[in-house]
Length: 308
Image (cartoon, rainbow, N blue to C red):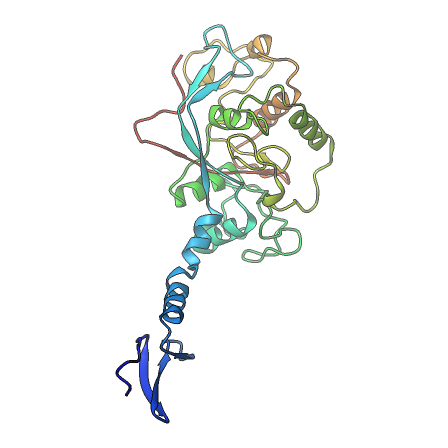
């Protein structure tokens, strides 16, 4: 072999003599023949392709991406005289987009008790995933990248726990949703208001658009308005009824008949709609426009809600 010729070894190598020049024929593990001449540039390019090629795990990471919402303040829509005007929200992470049909299909595949035919009616009503073609088949009404709907609060919590996440609290969700498209304070974002009220005026579609069509707000959260309604962890803790409940303890925390008298902003129609929906729900309910996204604490020691 010509000793002046550079050689490189990748995979299995054999030397072939052609005339008085030798060439090194190299085979990758996939058995695809590649001829490497004495050019170091060719070797560098091949090595770069092998090292930098995307891996399946990276695609999964992109599908479950989260954004960090910084510390802030949530102003509850309803409160009693004993409740604070503002609630501190510690920094937390939230899914960039809602959980999709493909995400939830992977979950029920791994956890059979949450499949449509096997779930207990205690944890999901008869509408649970009834737009899917089958237990493990999405069908035409549930595109893989559209947000999953017709899931109960119990099912949403189970999905979150299986992902080492949780559902966002009402204060976290409302704070994340309060941003405009370009400013963190979205109260004066006229385009956001137009988009939101236009969405509220439209009937629920038979097939929801894919999550990538949702607009991104100033926190980087995508489609938090305009795609679906979303479950929160403490959906039942701010119910407003026509009753007057004087008992202390759990019932007093869950129901507040005087709350509507102290509504912070009577012009925020969308917030009233969200509150009305939450107050009407039971944990096993599932509807054609209700899905969820997950959240995660930044640190175990931080609490998302401040005490009165």
